[in-house]
Image (tube, rainbow, N blue to C red; front, top):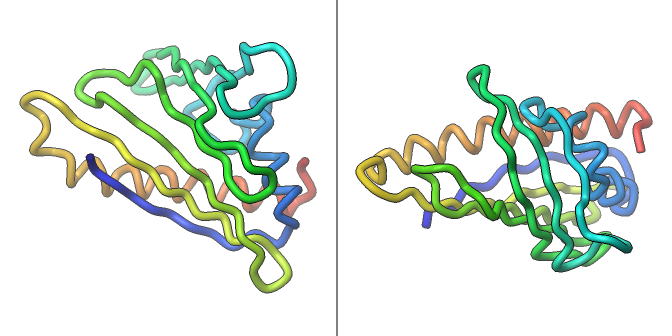
Length: 149
């Protein structure tokens, strides 16, 4: 299992940051590859809630099926991708939100597992995940600090 971490300080409350990140309708705002996303479970979102998203990579659309693995408002939010695409077998993202300097320290702890012949590329893939997800956190920061909810 390969792990990666990215972090950013956002000048908004933990609750504001959690509400923004946990709203599936906002995913495409802060995740540039996400074309659309929605929760597919009925009721209020929480642990066990499922969702569906469509990402566009290299001109190709891919459906993502998500499951919420952690929901501890406003401290922690976690997602697992249920239909990871070869050569990635499993992917999980856990967002930690902690008060810091009057704002919120948002830290992403991620894990993924590569299988097959491309396992040797896991280190390089980890670096790509850090860069890509770091960019997403910075986009969330800009939007939240501009007043988005």
